[in-house]
Image: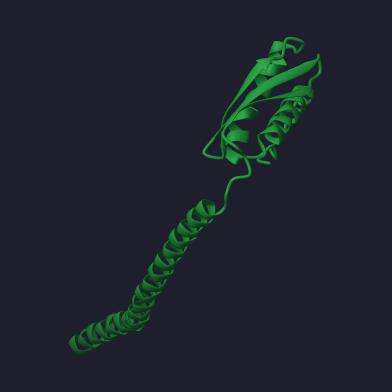
Length: 165
């Protein structure tokens, strides 16, 4: 009986050892995989960082080039204040365009007495976009299309007046 219980005890210990070994093998196999992954992840991070640095350098060069190009190109506009008129929904819209250093610096509505004030309040929001873009190639304001187009027409007329001869 003692032998039998000893044999069962040994057999139980063998089963425990086999189970342990079966669970240990996958873990041991994962260690090199994780090491390789970490190495690859670090290498990829270096490549991404180098690429980001190259992109940043290219953007800086592009900005410098754009600035040099802008300086090299002479503006077609003469500094001063110019008026333009465009047809809005309720009548003429008169604007005043200010050119400083060859660029649009300000646009003001001088008269839009025939326009509905609510529509004009919406359409006037375009003026800052025109100055920022240095162009009348901006979207008109939905719901205030006639007033928007009148303003843009007036700005284009004033820009035509500002052209150097």
